[in-house]
Amino acid sequence: MPLNTTTAPPFLTVLVRGLLAGLIAGLLAGTFAYVAGEPHVEAAIAIEEAASHAEPASGGHQHDEALVTRSGQRGGLFLATGLFGAAMGGLLATAYVLLARRRRTDDDGRSGLLLAGAALLGAVIVPFLKYPANPPAVGDPATIDQRTVTYLLMVVLGLVAVWAGSLGYRSVGAQAPLWQRVAAAVGGFLLVTVVSYVVLPSFQEVPTDFPATLLWNFRLASLGTQVVLWTGIGLLFAALMHHDRRRRAAAALPST
Amino acid sequence: MSSSTSSQPLVNPAGTTRLLWTVLATVVALTLLAYLVAFDQGAVSRSGMYLHELMHDGRHLLGVPCH
Ligand SMILES: [Zn+2]
Image 1 (cartoon, rainbow over the protein chains, first blue to last red):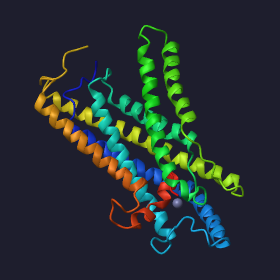
Image 2 (cartoon, rainbow over the protein chains, first blue to last red; image 1 turned 90 degrees about the vertical axis):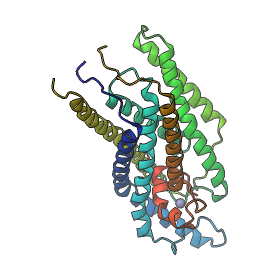
Image 3 (tube, each protein chain N blue to C red; image 1 turned 45 degrees about the horizontal axis):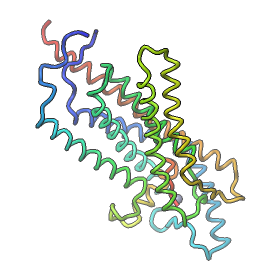
Image 4 (cartoon, rainbow over the protein chains, first blue to last red; image 1 turned 90 degrees about the horizontal axis):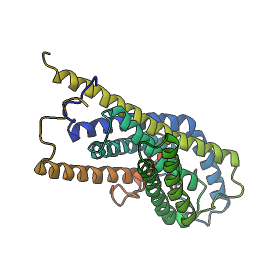
């Protein structure tokens, strides 16, 4: 074994790496969202405003222009993705430390990347296929509480599905051929996912006259934002941990 | 597998308890931060709807239900 681990890095060191990776990845995701998503948000808000002028009686969604201007909201995008990214990076780092005891491999980069991939699949892609992102002007304000709760539930269930997949993978003995282990993983994952999709309610709230291409483009941009975020967190965290490990390994070899 | 795991004892009850509390506090703090960005309507941030509106576009593009 070339690089032997010295002692495991302390929790706070790993946490700072995760927060930093998350902040940078969040800003990258914000940049992507700004370029790829903002035009669609603008277009959707224009539609929303046209609709609210048409029927002023319905309160609809209060985008209080008085409170924050549109350019303020566009700038706030970076604040939102940066903070959200930092929170997610920190949580990833925490999961990394908690799982470190059971980890079989020594390879820090690998498990960080696996965790980010698991989060992308479980907390983003699985919920997205059930409750895709919606631009302004789509969605009934009367159901926002229900939709928020079911969305959060779907995020949790998505993570459970990934966990079920990894249980399935490990439940088949290591001597078994790879295809059997992967089949067990897919089975566990799909079981939880499909049951969740069937049990949780669906919401059809896209106005009939909302442009389909705009909706599609917005959703792609939204999914892309999360993909950039989690790919960035995984790669940056792995890189920082790798750098850290090499430094520690060098420090642990004083004179030999 | 070659030699070194670490010279310290792997199980250190006092240290483990402290670590668990640190981890718990961290998870709570980070969840609160994510909540602030994704869902808060001023109840936690005490900023009225200011932060909520400021991070409006981020919420939509991160895929969180907004309205
Ligand atoms: Zn909105």
